[in-house]
View 1 (cartoon, rainbow, N blue to C red):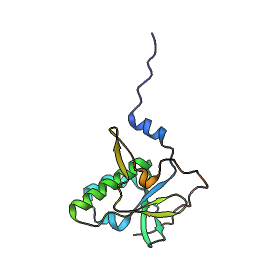
View 2: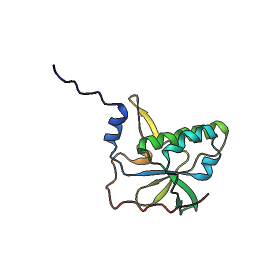
View 3: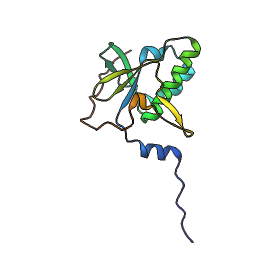
View 4: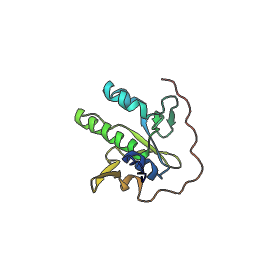
Length: 142
């Protein structure tokens, strides 16, 4: 009897294709104003025992531990809630060689042929060359 290979989940396929080395972080202050039920769903995707200080604005931010596409979609979702509430957009930073702030007016993801993909305006089309590993964030108590 021939053996049939188990079908892979779409998430496994996404994780295998994840080749980008950028990382995303979100402002701790902005997460405090998010509805607690939504924040409880986002919390497992964050590295909560470490926080990095984004030096450009001196703001504490927590880094996502999930793939870049998933983190970008979460930030877009949070910003959608901000627009509905009339609040300023959730602040986010991307790490390439240094932490840089992502514009609040630019969506991080877009739909292309029925699939969610990273917005090339924000992330570029080609993954950047991988240099040294990013420095580990400093621990911040809040």
